[in-house]
Image (tube, rainbow, N blue to C red; front, side, top):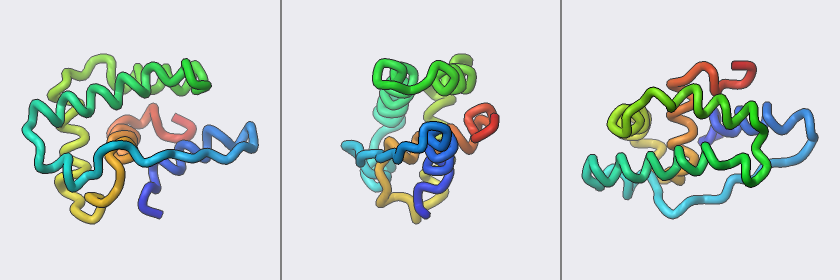
Length: 118
C-alpha cells in the first residue's frame, strides 16, 4: 500500500468506531512539490500542519490533535520542511502521491508519538 504509514495511523484511529476513513487527494503531488523553492515548500508544509492542528473542528479526537502538536510545536518551519523533504526527496517512488498524505507520512515516520499506540 503506497500510503502505508498514514493509512495505518488512520486505521488504528478508526478501529474503535468501526468507520472507514477516506483521505482525498490534495491539490499538490510530490512531483510538483520537489520543483518548488525551499520557501514555497516550507509554506506548503506549514499549511498542512496547520490543517492537522485544526482537524478537531472536523471530528479528529483531542488525543490525535495533541499528538500532532507534541510532534510539531518545537519545530521551526525549516525543520518541518526538512522532515518532509527527507521523506519525499529521497523516495522518488512516492512523487505521484498526494502531498497531504506524504506530509502526514513524513511526520508519522519522524515522530514516534504520532504512530499507532504512540
